[in-house]
Length: 383
Image (cartoon, rainbow, N blue to C red; front, side, top):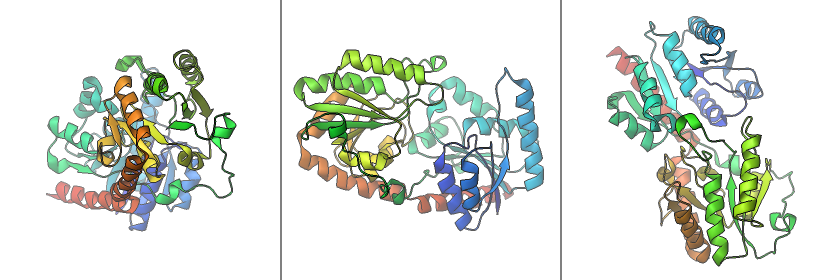
C-alpha cells in the first residue's frame, strides 16, 4: 500500500514522524509532502520518501494558494497513492480543494479539536468534504463531534498520535539542574510545573487569554500561596512563532498577580530532567488534544488538567490524576491544593496514570489502528 502524507511543517509535529516511522515498519510505502526544514532528514532516516511542498491558504497571497493546489495535484499524479493522509486543517482544506475530481480516498487525521469548537470553522471544513473523504479522530471528543455533525460512523476512525516511553527518558549526557537551587528556593519548597509554548489569544476565535491557560494558572497560584506560602510555580517554554510580545505580557501579569512565586524558565532541552522535580504538573489548556499530559504521566508526575478535548481520555479525576473545569482558576487552585495536601494519594494516582498512558498512547498500537483504518477505507471505497 502506498500512502501520501501531507504535513504543513518541518519544524515540529514529531507525532507525525513517530506514526509514519511505524507505518513503514508495517510495510506501508510512506511518502510525505512538507516544506523544507530540519525534520526532512529525520523522516528520510525513518524510511519515509520525502517531497517538498509549500502550503498556503491565505486570501492575501492568491498566487501562493494556487501554487499549492497545483503542487498537490502534480505530486499526486507522480506518487499515485492508494490513500492520501493529511494531518492538519490547512493541508486537508488544500487537499480537498485541489483534488475535487479525484476518487483517491482521503483521510483527515485530526490533530486537535480547536477548529471543531467553533461553528464557522467546523462547517467550513465539513462543507468542502466529499464522498472520498474520511476522518481519523485522535481523541474521543473529536470523534463524537463529527458524529454529531452528521458524518456516518463508517467514515470516522479513532487513532491516537502515540508516543514511545523512550521519548521521555532523560538524556544521560545532560547534568540534572536543581531548579530549587537555581531559583534560590528552599529545598522543601513545593513546585508546581507547567511545560507549554506561549500561544497568544486569537481574537477571531473570541479568545481573550492564551490557548494554554498560562494566565489561569497564575490566577490559581495567587490563591494557592495564600495557604501554602512556600509553593512556587515554574513555567517552562518559550513563545510560539512571533509570540514574544504576548509572553512578555504574561510575565508582567505574573509579577502583578502573584509576585515572587512565578518563575519563567524559558525554552529548555532538559525537560525530562525537570519533570521529576515537580510535585505536580498542570495543563490548564482551553483547547487540547491530549497535550502535555502524556509527558507528565510518562514522567511519573501527578497530573492536573482542564476538562477539554482528549484530556479525559487519559485523566480520570480521582484515579489517574486531577481534573478541573477549563477557564476556572478557583477550581484549579483547589485541585492544586488537593494534590499537594496528600502525597500518598498523589502517588497512587501517579502509578495508575503510568499504566493508563502506556495502554492508550502506545505508538505501535496506534500505528496499527491507522493501518487497519487504511484497509477499512479501501474496502469502503470499493463497496
